[in-house]
Amino acid sequence: MRVALLAGGLGGSRFARALGETLDPADVTVVGNVGDDLEVSGLHVSPDLDTILYTLAGLLDEDKGWGRAGETWNAREAATQLGAETWFQLGDRDLGLHLVRTEALRRGEPLSSVTVRLTRALGVAATLLPATDERLRTWVETPAGELSFQEWFVRRQHRDEVDGVRFEGAEEARAAPGVLAALEAADLIAIAPSNPFVSIGPILAVTEIRHALERRRVPAVAVSPLIGGRTVRGPADRMLARLAGGTGPAQVTQCYKGLIDALVVDETDADEDAGGIRTVVTRTLMSDAGARRRLAEAVLGVPV
Ligand code: GDP
Ligand code: CA
Image (cartoon, rainbow, N blue to C red; front, top):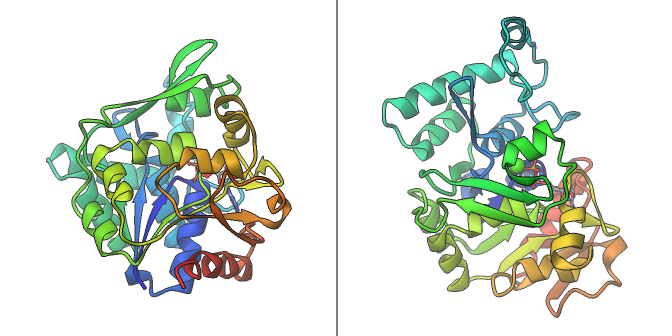
């Protein structure tokens, strides 16, 4: 069974791992969000792609939920001492990856090609692709004004309420090579339990990808990022409350209107209105290998 997965960082990477452990990972293509990408000290950083890459390679710092385990911070300390802005933290090993990626991009290699090379180099069998090779950036409208995604998320620790999101470059951006083919070849399209607005939103804002989902001939299934009406981590619950009017399955469904056939919800949300979509109820917290497999099987069981 071939699966194409739309994914953000933390929830995205955990569910990508769940699929990779349950299926032949060669049959899994992950389409990652690049709306969070940024330049740090001249280096191109793709935080969501890297969280997925490190997770699938077994290198993620699982406590932090980003970056590499066993990281050291010498470069950052030196840069701070020299007066650089270092609010976006990059560890020494992580920097190695950003050096390789940035050098390749400067040579003219597309992001999708670099990303595939990095996954292969780290022994990852699943395919990881950015939604687009073109520039796509998420901007967040807040009472303090419009902020770039990372300014809001990392620098201001997503304290500001969000009144709207904008995906610079998305409408004109083409899907990266391989993305539409993976969606076309899939037996199932899955949407990870990621932030619907700022992780999945930028992927779906790429017109070709949205159209591919609208015209799908196979089931599309989303996993809700909510457990008991709350997110496991991050601002998705606050955003759902403010932008969609509630923090239940119905509001998640609303974000994916016309794009999904079923929503997997946690047991704790089973009695809530799901907005008229077919639901599959299971425990959705991916706390260990058993929990990941159970969730993957719930999603993969939808078509039959
Ligand atoms: P980010 O790019 O790192 O912010 O990550 P994502 O957007 O991919 O994921 C953030 C979402 O993942 C949050 O809304 C969490 O509620 C959700 N999440 C993280 N771990 C789990 C899990 O084990 N189960 C479920 N259902 N959601 C999770
Ligand atoms: Ca992200």
